Image (cartoon, rainbow, N blue to C red; front, side, top):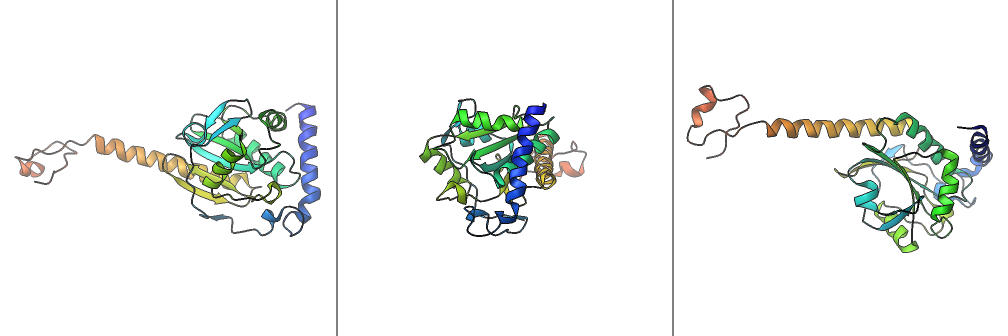
Length: 239
């Protein structure tokens, strides 16, 4: 990161530090951040829809089929005029990007979803995201107001104003539908632990599927095969 970008990020984080005493209190314009739930709970169900969105480069993407696809996904909710929690979430994502570099885009994708589509145009997201140097595998999404609202609702996020958006990060396996909500948005290690857990689960599922595919069904006419030298892995079929 060059000196200019480092100073820009430092300025964002300084603003965050100045606001932190108020970030979890009522009446500061961020009521969605008012009370801190447990570090990890299942929360509202996550059922991503295929709403059409636009990324920071102006590409049209469908949420479920294009943006999430079959990846392990980390989703954060931000808007570019936010001065407290959002820079923290984005800084956490920058740390995740560095830690997950070998897996980014191949297995893992980061998604920063705006809660303010009126002001957060693709160009605005592009400018703002540059402070955090996103690389391949880190999408910043916006779109039509109705489409963004539909996408947010499918993540279990309901807001009336951008200032009231919840401080949380979702970690999920878009293929299996396993999702976890994390509320300690300044703890990248907690997110990494969930990502590792999901990757391990994917490997276990694939291993079990490969093992099952390698077994041959026993000959129905020879049910005694299992005790008379059948091939290893032969699976008896119901007669």
